Length: 191
Image 1 (cartoon, rainbow, N blue to C red):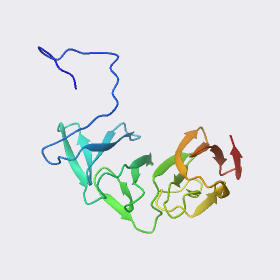
Image 2 (image 1 turned 90 degrees about the vertical axis):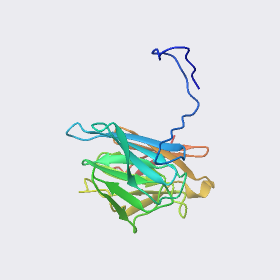
Image 3 (image 1 turned 180 degrees about the vertical axis):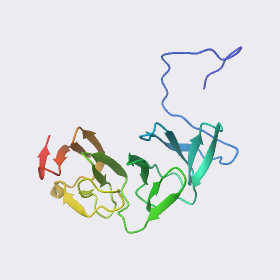
């Protein structure tokens, strides 16, 4: 909380532990915030709030609901691939958003984490398969189908807790270890 005796003055060096947002259409706190930029330069800012996902419409200066009815409070992850945003929260149906319409894909795994590296989509954090890394074909038209998967040291008793990318490589984080994965080389390396 910041208190000013007069008008707001720019401040630098502030550190926030958490941020909560509220609106007149939703009183639930924000739990996810994702920003993407299309190839045409359009910026999309998505925010999860309660059981809804909002998009900030900069031209209108307001937030609009793009998806309702999600499991309340579940953080979502998203990636942009070929100007379409793909969104997952590990509980509700995997979905895409093209800037106008949200489409759900009931047959796609429900992962918590998404990344794209070297034109291949990766998903992990699926509750039923906590040690599997799912991935798409190379250079797919879209990220709707994750037809392949690879166990990431499933015998270590650890769940996948995150994904990141380093160039064409995907870094798979587990509770006490991390792995580098490259589909084109078909190898997993413990780091």
